[in-house]
Image 1 (spheres, rainbow, N blue to C red):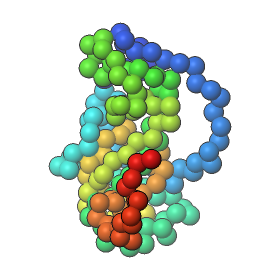
Image 2 (image 1 turned 30 degrees about the horizontal axis):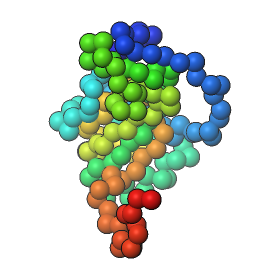
Image 3 (image 1 turned 90 degrees about the vertical axis):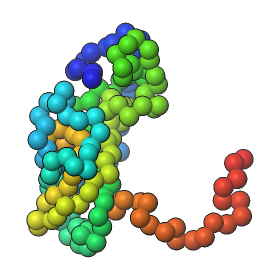
Length: 163
């Protein structure tokens, strides 16, 4: 795993352009057992520990009916991640891959996603299994897991044609 500010053999960093405000609002905070990137699992596990997703006001009312779903997609901001690597060596063997071809937390816009199992709700807190981020990670959004939905409209001619 990449340690803070480490550049491995084969990796390349770039100078990022100035940040612009996309209007992102953190709607809550994720509480996990992990306080070190080195101890955080690389992928969440369905049999992993219960983690807590705290939703802040005024967004608590948006949790209405969330219990109807067994799985949720959680989007979060990987606030301690590097944002300048374009080539990375995930195996630390000197070979490099493009950042967009791997699931590393080091990304230009460090947005993380997890599909979690909803274990319960306590007011403004969701109890979930399957997280893979540090304690205190800012929450961007929550959505019902999309594969549980039937498409609204049937496919139309030309929907899947590549031009």
